[in-house]
Length: 183
Image (cartoon, rainbow, N blue to C red; front, side, top):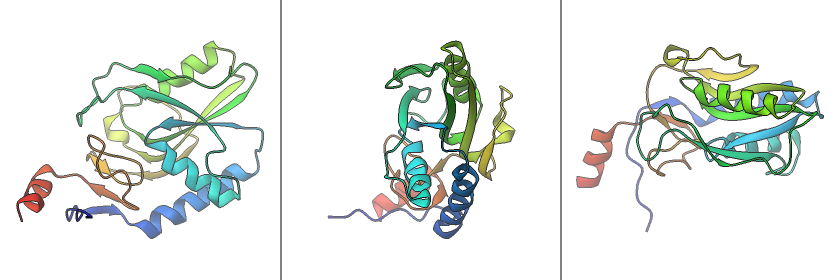
């Protein structure tokens, strides 16, 4: 039985998400030497969509997993590496693929770790950016959309593991979810 998705406000519809990812993929096309590193779990959808747009097999990238949210909707500020790269970044040019850059702490932390471990360079490409939430200045080489300070779900982003599979980006509202469960 499929549970209906609550009627969350859509911030970026599916067509706009797919169009912008196609544009970002074209910008990356000219640099086949970049080692793509998707930040799990959220960026997997973004990375797979980039691969599809470039005619590469989905999953043709490395992954790391960090945690700063736990099960909540607010970053704890403490970053923990849960899954490391499959091999050393030494001498390589790295492109971090992220679903959303909020405070900037996670991508800043990852960039510093990769450079400390000998990466030649590290750039960041993100589907979403929330500049109003930055506490750490980070350079972003690719940005899909700048969004307001809202907790968003869909296209890889979730709340406690839910709504990651939505093909669009919506604003999460707990009261809407509660109301839909009681309807």
